[in-house]
Length: 46
Image 1: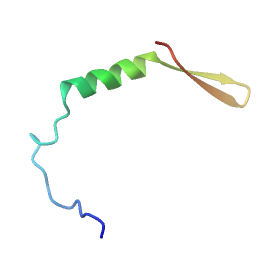
Image 2: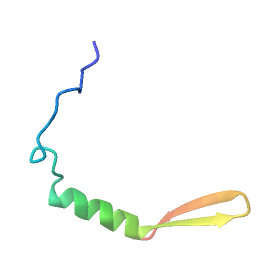
Image 3: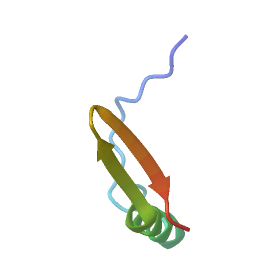
């Protein structure tokens, strides 16, 4: 059976870890999307 996610969580339990936030911010800074005609190219600039 599928797990039900209807229970409310407190805000303290739902805070992301600092490492997760840093990872996502760094990834979004390094991601570059290039549009060429009707194509899209994604480049990770690391």
